[in-house]
Every structure is written in C-alpha cells, then in structure tokens.
Length: 163
Image (cartoon, rainbow, N blue to C red):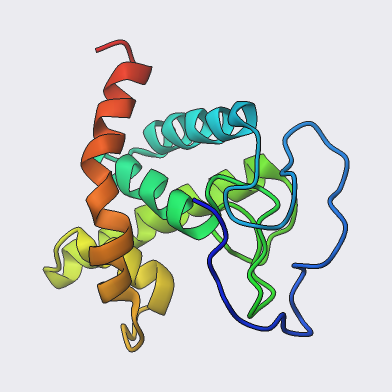
C-alpha cells in the first residue's frame, strides 16, 4: 500500500519530519514506502507477538491487515491529518517493536470486546478506528480495506510456520 491520504498536512502531523536513521525504518512517511526487508521483519514480528499474547491465527491476520491498511508495514508512516504514526498509527513513536506490541495488544483487546458484545470479526478493526463508540467510518473501512485481506494473511501465517 502507498499513502493515499489526500489531505493537507495538519500542524500536529509528523508527515514532514525527518526520518531517524535506524535499522528498521521507512524510506519516507508515506504508508508502504519501506523496503521489502523491513516489511518482512514487521510481518514476522506481528505474527510472533500475536502468537505470544494468545491471538488466534485469524486475529493475527486481522492485525496484519490492519497494519497493511494503516501503514503499509512502514514503522515511519505518519498520518497527514493527525499526530498518529507507525505501524498501527498510534502516538508511540519510531520504535518498531513497541509499535508491534501496541498493535497486537490493541487487536487482542478489541477482539475481546467484540466477542463480549457479540460482534463479528469485522468489528475488531472498527473498534481500532473508532474506539468503543463505533461512531465513525471504522466498520465500512474494515469491510472494504481490512477484512478482504485476512484470508491471504492466514495463508501467509501458515507459510511462516511451515504448514
């Protein structure tokens, strides 16, 4: 995925800030503008951390699809419209492992909340995007931009594990 947010850069955005020189960084602040090596490292980290915290393979696939949509697996991705940055577009900055931990734990919490409320898996990303109020466009984005990628990421997880 490449950055597609077609808005003016907000004053609180990090979109125009310099990229830090570190091992697992992006080429720019645009979603998806990152080397294949870094993308693979992010994907492996999400799979491993997801398994460590007890996510199901489907929930790990949702975390991967979320990372794809939010950042294109670029640890340096920055929203133009807010101060959100990184793999899951949170406000924790620049450390890939911290970003993966935040995303995976957020997916875990959202999956638990969705189950508690009797919602389907498509609500995991909706809760990520909207929060518990579910009062914005998260559900439609989930159905259009996240959930269609879940089956492909399930296959990737099986390949990663050698199944």
